[in-house]
Amino acid sequence: METILVTGGAGFIGSHVCETLINLGHKVICVDNFNDYYDPNIKHKNISNLVSSLNQSNFVLYEKDIRDKEALLEIFEKERPNKVIHLAAMAGVRNSLNHPELYFDVNVMGTLKLLELCKKFNIKQFVFGSSSSVYGDNLSLPLREDLLTNPMNPYALTKQVGEELCKLFSSNSGMNIVCLRFFTVYGPRGRPDMAIPNFTKAIIQNKELTLFDAGALTRDFTYVIDTVNGIIASLNLNHKFEIINIGNGNNIPVKQIITLIEENTSNKANIINEPRKPGEVMHTKADISKASALLNYVPAVSIEEGINNFVNWYSDVVENEENKDSEENN
Ligand SMILES: NC(=O)c1ccc[n+]([C@@H]2O[C@H](COP(=O)([O-])OP(=O)(O)OC[C@H]3O[C@@H](n4cnc5c(N)ncnc54)[C@H](O)[C@@H]3O)[C@@H](O)[C@H]2O)c1
Image (cartoon, rainbow, N blue to C red):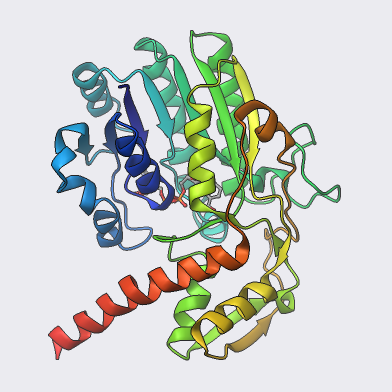
């Protein structure tokens, strides 16, 4: 059993990571500040089964900010983690255009403070949640880790600086550091600001949805359990420093996602077309040969299966709860 500290552990990807680590028999120290970028109640629900489970002693929750050095110091002193998975961040490309200072404060300064503590406490393995957005609009698809990066928005730039900080600390400490570039992750508990949850909600509730560039943008949509498997595998990679894509390797037009949601809900989308927003990348598609070679990473969930799982989860959990809430308020 290892003691693994997960920052951002109550978020979308983080809550799945915590759950998987507990199921594998590890002790998880979850640090999350439950900020209100989206409804914090969603984050409490994400981890409610862990907080209340019989395995409670294996799951310790700290509602703390990664920028609060003293609080983090106390946590490290008390819990003595041996590995760290760093997922806490201000996510969301569009929001970063309006709040660049906040994004730099959390994603860059927060990461720096955490790395300093990890160095001080002789952490052996550090996994950093980076993003495919660092590639920007790159004409050479699939995107390989050795391509020149081209961040097109503050969020992407903070992730690139985060990777550079990781590289520096891997060279001046005993840490192995793996930066994982995640590609558009979706699945149960999906972040409500992202396209698939937004589209699903609008289609189920017969509301309008906004589609950019007539749905011609393409994304490498990756099912969250595949992403989590990549994260878990990287905990045992005994290399000083690596940057590795964690995607599906596909290249799905956003329009096709809408068609799949329509098929799974038997509803028609009510589409408002708009041009692409500044800072938005046109296409992503991961080259996953490095992940396959170093982590034995093989994405297992097709987009058809993943959307089906997501829509089922959304209808069961989110829609049912919203209906219950509105009945209780009547
Ligand atoms: N979801 C994706 O498609 C995607 C793609 C690329 C990279 N990523 C990265 O993966 C990580 C997880 O993303 P997610 O989609 O689960 O987002 P999320 O917003 O659901 O999770 C991030 C969590 O971090 C917490 N957090 C934010 N600032 C914090 C702070 N200062 N101190 C402590 N906790 C803080 C939030 O409360 C949240 O629970 C992020 O680093 C994100 O940038 C996600």
